[in-house]
Image (cartoon, rainbow, N blue to C red; front, side):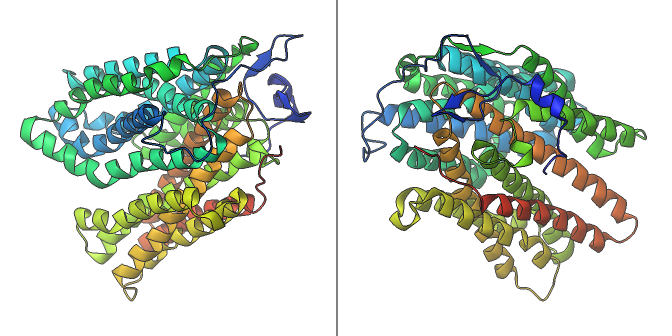
Length: 492
């Protein structure tokens, strides 16, 4: 959701953005030492038209895929095993924290990761991130209590924040711009496959050898994946002129606390949740804009508009995705498995949208892809309304949802490419981190507010509650479409 306009004094708190060709790039959290406007030397880009998997960067592509796959698998698999974990560790009261904690802590690590990678290159941060991610998995897998399990989940989130930013930096600094869309398609497939098979695999592991191995089996694969990109990381150097603004660390901690509190308040477990929600919203809205490219929450031209468009589309789609399965179960009589199977059409078409964006010549214009994709996302959110109508066949609901998934694949992969296009070589880390922080904050705010709205309306009219929360999600997606229509390619 687009936040209210921040006060002008906030702009003075942030350091001035770096400039590229005399124009602001929108870089966040970076200062350059006076008298040293140099950019970091970068590794020679791969020639345009190079084959991804079989070319000289095949190992890097495989490493990017496997690391993204592991982060996605753990993110999705935990939902399958959490009921068992909560029961065995007697932690049902802390159930929501197992999902909110990694996201909140990830805000801090992403904030640190951007400038650190721009200054020193991604090698140390990515390697450290994989090790921290693996440590968190070990702690969670061996946890004797729910408190220890949550600690492991938080540590895991800390590591995944470094990894996610690092993958963006690697794509930007290793691959020619004509290849980036195809590499983003690889990353998309790394998320789609766990969405299709992750819950089944996690459930099978939990049934055969216990839920702990869902966490304990991953670190070895993560370290092996790191080996695939080890040498490539060393070839990417940083720019010593980049300096971390230390105030951003404190802002990130406050935003993380706000995101965590918003998620907790949305559960409405305590009588004082309204006060917690208002306080968390106030903190998040005040400090989150300082962690993203300046002007993002106002939709300013250039990079800020790219970030705003992505966050609005993501939040709108996730908001609808939360209630579509519930409506299918509650109003159509489907089982949870049947509802999930119906919605896999969205995951499959997500990959298709990303692939077409990278490989179809008629879609070569990036702004065109964003506009087409965003429109499809808005259409897809209508699946929630259709699921409420008994007269609409289920195959129509699945088809409309698939259109939304197609749009997400096309729009988000293209927006990722545009972010790198709008960023200088020594700005890709900070800008990638800012974009992902913006996504996390927007999704958390929409889900929490939607949860509160739905809970209140349950006591009045459940059907009206569905209509309101789905309308809220569609309205946010519609704002994303408005932004998308004004997205521009980076000027050369």
